[in-house]
Length: 249
Length: 259
Ligand SMILES: Nc1ncnc2c1ncn2[C@@H]1O[C@H](COP(=O)(O)OP(=O)(O)OP(=O)(O)O)[C@@H](O)[C@H]1O
Ligand SMILES: [Mg+2]
Image (cartoon, rainbow over all chains, first blue to last red):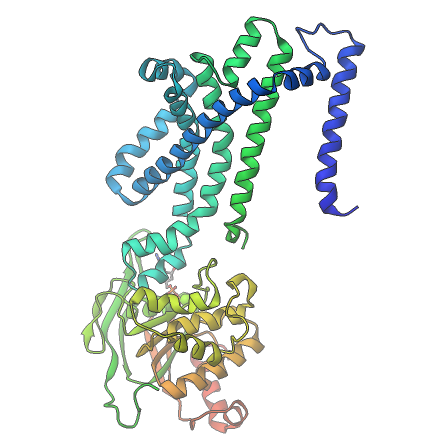
């Protein structure tokens, strides 16, 4: 079989084997459904509650996308400021790295206090989780611009803006995209954590409710939906990163 | 083409007096160049050779306005205070942007310097450097020799009066290097820019230059300035067969301590 086909067939086969193993071992060992439901039960929930699962998933997706987009814009602006403005590098940069060590999960209750139970608190949580890797990756890319090219631009008497626009930003793009790939699943974690703390909807809320009512199959259904959404977003980033093909040359 | 050499007033393109350079890095700093005096006339082709680390690149960067220095250094009569629009530089390491095509890389220098060029200029440069058919390629799709052709083209397209070349073909195999040297000579014989070439190759220096300047080990000083009296235009076979050529090779090899 060609490599292309195997790239699709192998992971699918692997998933099917895992799924069968799950189904049979739960049945074989007669595990109680509230501890570990069978895969068929989980699929049944996914199917029966597809409309509500879809709607809750859309809400979580919206939180992730908005938070991630804000983290992208904010992260790039912060990285540019840290890189090009010495005062910002001396003041803001150490503060951001220090703040990074505060567990962001612990900030969730505060965000509820500040932004309430609506979507904004989840936007902020997704943003907080996603922004740091984007800042660090973008900074790395800006600093990693080959020194000989920087000197070449200097020899050409390029203005500061021209050097940023024509040289620094394109050379930072591959690294920036890598940061985005790390940030996407983190944004998902941020959104779900935000939903745990205070929410009436979203997949995190579904998980919380399922837990309190011992509907474990529903919980698994929500977890699978989260995983699939994260994976789809990551694939999208992979596609976008193909546009920055000069990473590999 | 550019200025007609026979009519042009031959003036000093580069004038250097009592130039020295200390790099501040390291304990007490590194004295890279000491007491350099050098004049390069307009339209002259001057090569500099010397042992590795003797300060050739440092001297070239100072002329290019990329490094501060002590002493006096003038380009076209004006003290060097930064990169001059009359100067183009080509380094050993490719200066091409990986995300731009050959065409775009050729035009980049002119765009940044805001020198107007026409598509005709670009296609003429593509013809001149034998890059036809590779206009839309990106640097990684070009051979090392072709990449350096593009770098050279980017430097030439703005019609600089002074060309600084720091081992531009140093990373290439001998055959490609010879070919590019011949092309460089052909281009230079038409346009007659003032050229300052850093090289490790004695034969390359002799074949191309009007003068070969020899530098001492660090701290670099100029220990000899050899006028190359070989007729132009030069062809590989005839020039290498000339008895004066081997005499220059011997003289320079002795100065460099290789024989
Ligand atoms: N940025 C720098 N900081 C400190 N010292 C430097 C720097 N650049 C060069 N030097 C030192 O200055 C001396 C001259 O360096 P330079 O690169 O000019 O030599 P070169 O003659 O071009 O050598 P090569 O033939 O190997 O290219 C060397 O001893 C080098 O270590
Ligand atoms: Mg050098």
